[in-house]
Image (cartoon, rainbow, N blue to C red; front, side, top):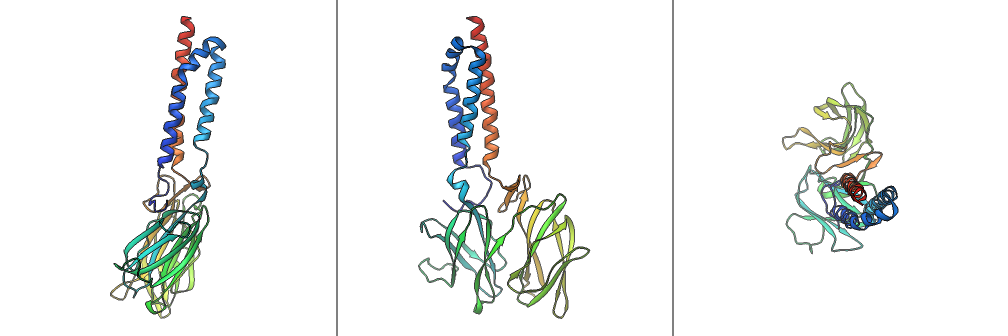
Length: 315
């Protein structure tokens, strides 16, 4: 099923597995206590420990969906194109789809989790029936563990869809990673840099993106130079341990503005719509559930150990 809006959330499957593990362990109590009286306390506890850890291993073995999961979001970066409805439809199962309605210029949606595979991405005028021929469409094949942004770019008469590969690799401690998406039609090319920091791109054409660059975390001034001199200086705030896409957009009054979006963040700082990463890769929310189940299983072990000792002493 696609369309889960918060990568990193605890899945219903993980909760079900946790419940099953604890119930199996608890139901085994009576038999093991009886067994302990015949084979000895230490052997019984050793067997119980092996059983609990084995159950946890089975419960949290990576499933097919976890192994094939990737991330997808949509962007509207065409200044003169009206609002659109965006459809993402799985080629394997056309009933499995994402629909975003009323998407306007400058919008960058939240990430959606999708299974690895092929999808058709199409845009229709806002409010149009799904049977209406799309204004534009493209095909995307996602790979497990990767993240993508599908963007409508260019002016309306030359509108196209482009697929951006989002690199969610976290920066070194105390730093951020930043790229710029040049979505200003009023400036055909831009030189983009951070005052006191690195250049983010030179002669960056409209409807393109720069590579990710590493910068120190903090408050910065983004300097944007057009072909006729200084176009704008714009504030930029980036946090340590995060990865950003910075959109340069046209204002309705003719100026420029900057919209900052978090692509990924270290564990504990993930915002809605960004991918939470850590420990060398894209994290899943089942890790917290696994810890909770481990604690529960340990508690069951402790209670059973006390019960076995007590019954053994009575016997």
